[in-house]
Length: 424
Image 1 (cartoon, helix red, strand yellow):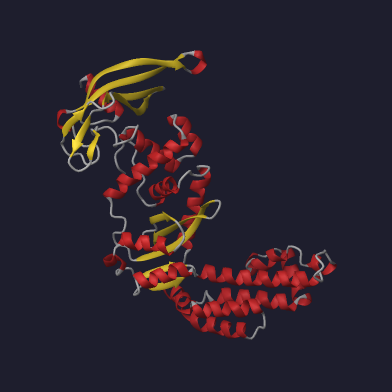
Image 2 (cartoon, one colour):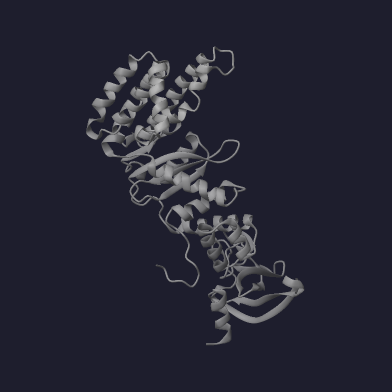
């Protein structure tokens, strides 16, 4: 094998002619030595010259551009390596004057395809510190690489193929109310779409990308009780069965129970804002009230028994919460059991639970459909947890585009392959 081919294989480049390889001293390296940079002088093969950097069309040369340019390649052992080549400009009928395409890197990128693929793969598997130290680049650079790798992946795959049952939810990814809206496929378990925002326009953007024909093929949509999701789903895919996650219904009940607990606690303090013997008895009661009976410790069981004797109103609210939780677990009998619970809540004379039964009646069809079809937001909540983990490992992202790209690569089933490895 000729040495030029060996260098092409080492660098992971194709359709490239290697002209020469030089070693360049760039300054002080580790332990006071000179850092050596491997400079590989190259040019596109004959059939790849003078092509538009955007569309790849053969074009007329415009000028020599700004001279020679360098692209960062994968390290060769412990030494950094770059590809150096001329960067002429061409005149494209569609995109105007632009830098000519090179076969080893994306248009406008400063890294080779192999470098981008390695960085994106590492970002889906490793922590920020690992990627930064191993590749000797900045974390913002890793985000930019993930974004452009995802653009190429998105252009080459059909994200919405076979989409029938979806879940929609939002997740906070940054302080000051910065949210992402995400969509998952219940059948494949994949994250299929994500965008910054939490409003009707964001959900409309998903259905615009999906298209009216495919929106009509959606059979089930699961979400929480957010009106901004309900309204858009009803307008864009009216024939889909709307399913409301039982977890959020129980959360409503838990919030209502906590409202009652705070009212009882404040009443024990006499409205004077100071600790009393009665308020001390309710200290940390929320943990005993929130937990499922089968998970209670001996001390929490004793505290519940005390609440049943000393605070019957709060205990009745606790029984209402537990009754709702059990009613939602009855499968085909959920509708009958839930209606009995609604009648009980209407007579309970606890304002928080009277309001809760009204909300349940308002979302009745969606709640019963979730029980009938066995759909919940468990998959979406799991995806949200993984996105939060990605954000934490990365110590945050400057822009949502990098987070969305990394989430789609990691959770959408499109993780990039390492260069030189066969697809598993």
